[in-house]
Length: 100
Image (cartoon, helix red, strand yellow):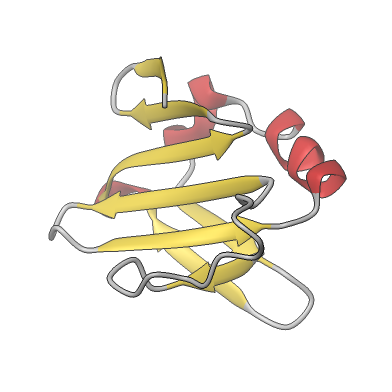
């Protein structure tokens, strides 16, 4: 995963979107976005997530080979998973899905 500051527009590669974007919105109003450009890895990430139990853990960890970000669940308002144009919005206590 690659961390991207949400207030800085990331350069687009030939107009294509990354395979997966994970957007965090925190209780203090700040945001953090992570991207996974590889479609196969993105599918594996989505298969490994159980939205029903996502906020039952104390922390959420987003990592790649060289870095790791750890977020305390009580400080997260919601998480958006953007995959192939579909947005899955996960917040407490429910999960809502809508299309881009």
